[in-house]
Length: 132
Image 1 (tube, rainbow, N blue to C red):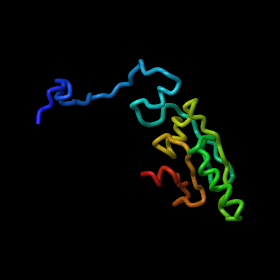
Image 2 (image 1 turned 90 degrees about the vertical axis):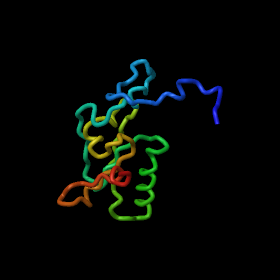
Image 3 (image 1 turned 60 degrees about the vertical axis):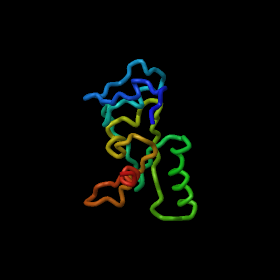
Image 4 (image 1 turned 135 degrees about the horizontal axis):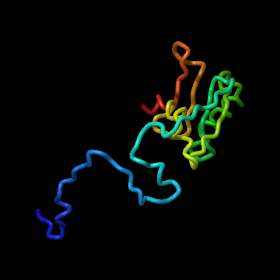
């Protein structure tokens, strides 16, 4: 069945470009967050505390969920729920630093690293593993 109102552009086949480029006119404070790139944008190691769990997050609706869980576990007296929390300021692009990207390649908060459960002494980045 033919649709007389269909334009010629709707019938053209889409051909993706060989190399994606960022639209420089995208504008806005958070425009660079969704660049068509992957990997770290700059070098910066993450701090690591003494607790077995290291939480890297920000006080956003999704960012506090792991923090709430860990606080509830601690309140129940669950051993191994001790953690150190570090702020990852997504408005400043801190989720694109090399240390954060190493534990969460999607560059999304929160990220939790368990230094007590690693194999051969290696820490486990829990959230990036759960999502892959």
